Amino acid sequence: MPDGSGGRAAHGSRAGIRLLRRSVGRHRGTLALGLLLLSCWQICETLVPVAIGLAIDHAVIPLDIVALAVSVLGILALFVMLSYSYRFGARCFQRVREQEAHALRVEVAESGLHSSRDDRAAGEVLSLASADADVASEVFFHIGRGGAGIIGLAAAAAYLLAADPLTGLVVAIGVSLSLAVVALPSRAITRRSAVQQEAIGAAGSGASDLMHGLGVLKSIGGERWAATRYRRLSRTAADAGVATGSRTGVLEGLGALTMMLVLAAVVLTAGLRVAEGSMGIGTFVAVLGVAAFFTEPMQTIAQVVGALARSRGAADRIAAYLDGARNADAGDCAGDATFRAPAPGPARVEGGAVYVEGLALDDGSSLDFHAASGTLTAVVAERPATADTVVAALAAACDGVSSIAAPHHVDLFEGTIRSNIALDHDESAAVAKEAIDASAARELVELVPDGLEHRIDDLGRNLSGGQRQRIALARALHADPEVLVLHDPSTAVDAVTEAAVADSITELRRGRCTLVVTTSPAYLSAADAVVFVREAAPAVMGTHVELAERSARYREAVSR
Image 1 (cartoon, rainbow, N blue to C red):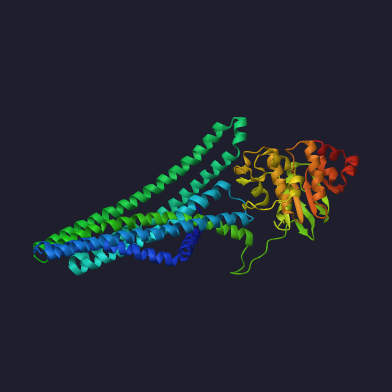
Image 2: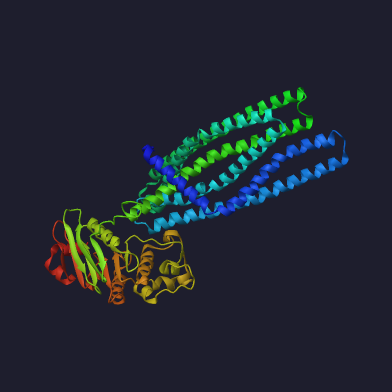
């Protein structure tokens, strides 16, 4: 995968950091409480060897039973405090992690729902809303563990400086060098992680495509081709994951190695201090215990640096998607608050009517026509590609409130017949009886035992093509928009049912504008006007009977 220019990478990294900062800002209070509790846990862990050293000096060596009992109780209290502070601190970070992962998933989904940009495959968006959102929200654990580790290191260093300045100085210098060594590979891990997440997104997109077209692949014997293609995508994702894991492992290994060197230097320094009589036995035990404690937060910090780099990589991808969607909708920026509106499309909805003016077709010609308010207008395209162009232009003109474009491709969602028609998961949501009757969905509703509550699998896989079309048509009619655009709404039903549906739609939609892009004689006969879009020739308009009488090309187009 190409790395792209340095400018784009830098911009993506800044955008990812801004997203992570925004996420942190939304949970300041809970994060502050969690960091306080985890810091208390780390400080208590630091104090355990100190308490043991004090017990040796003041209870064990003098053989003072009372002091020993007090020491045991004090150490027990330390363990209780560190146990509960970690327990409740970790809960705080777990809570905000789950809340922010949910918020990011919803934001990605809403961006896809409300943006006009559709250049991302469904599987890639799914990866952003699942894997990337989860990895990005892990930043809260990194903040908690890393912040508490740094505070624990500071507390331990403060004790060592107070107990023995020379030993404390050795630790301060060694830890500073270790942190610098650990921080060096983080940028490379961020880049590797971004590549890994991109590869995972591509693999998810490939899997989504394969499952969506599984029936076609099986019917034409394309299983081997599909398996080979997905294996290649999965292998790329696996290789990227191994590369990221290798860099992270190197980082953690460097952290462990440098800390072992620091620990060895501390042991040597403290041993010399004991030998020369400058340090007592209890202090020596405490210093060694605190120095050994340094290895845990240092390893934690090394792990956090690598994990934080992965979170930044995931945040970069989410931020790039959200920014791209916003830019696609807002147009080009002219300053911070001024936007240049996109140029109007060749189709528009105005006053309950549809106007198509200067729509460029792929044969070099252009299309102009007007669908009056309160009429049923049919559009017949001599070439299928032209029909797709017309539908795309009409869909772009629809705003989803006063007008709706229902494509030929049917999308149903997991739920019930009721929820797919009303687009509402409320079991008491009203569904227009007229819409069910006009779409011929009544037959399906009466056929299944649960009626409108009949469960529908994802993508409507448990329904036939004709049943899916009827539910989709009922959904469009139930919305009852001022302008409705349909594209071959009932090709999967028999001719008698289609004729009945066409008549019912005409009656139900009387007084509102309806456009049907189709070659079906049932709709053409019911239409008030028919627009015949000819190849490399001006479009003509008339009734179905008029066009059939005077145009052989029209008769051929509608008899296919």
